[in-house]
Figure 1 (cartoon, rainbow, N blue to C red):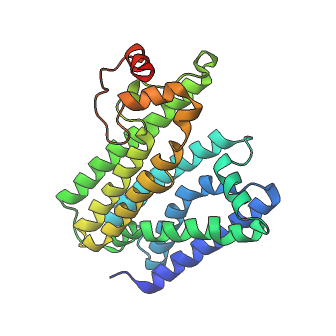
Figure 2 (figure 1 turned 90 degrees about the horizontal axis):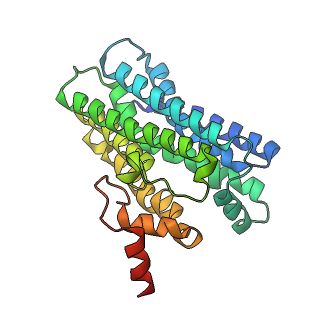
Length: 271
């Protein structure tokens, strides 16, 4: 079981971070800054838990978990901050704002920042089990690191390929369907999926099989809530080329594209 006093320290750190983000959002008039905070919630949870247990070391499962979550969190937060810089509030949050007026600026404390902090605490459970463990590394740990590495390749590689694609003015209005994006329509989400199942394997190696709730919750969010389902809700209507891309390419799990040409797809639509 988790050390409850250390878990309380981590929860308080997350609460303070969420409150700070909310106060900053009031000043900026932009709650989408929470996207940059999302990955940092996990890093803060792990570091706070380790500090409370005095579990910092240069070897073992605790060090492995801290290093892996730091790499993942700092890269993802940095990328999202760079991507969103100067863009204003994301349209998804504008819709949430409109649905929850009046007084959204106060409601956003629990609807946006509090909720994401709570979700992060729950999803971070495998990290906390791994940090608390003092048992020797085993084959599940190495499998977890391997799965984490696959996830990072898809997540970071997908983000890099998309950033390069968007930076070319000639690609305006086009759909990226090469590289990792030819294997899955959401390589970054699939990468996140692998990362968190990798963290679960670290916890499972330490006896924390019960933390399976973490990757299951993350998988559900990626597939049905804030990931694939939300992004593709109406994108096919706004971008006809994307609708063709959908017919050729796997939604989530990587695989080869179907042999459907744009011309064949157009004939099928007309017929």
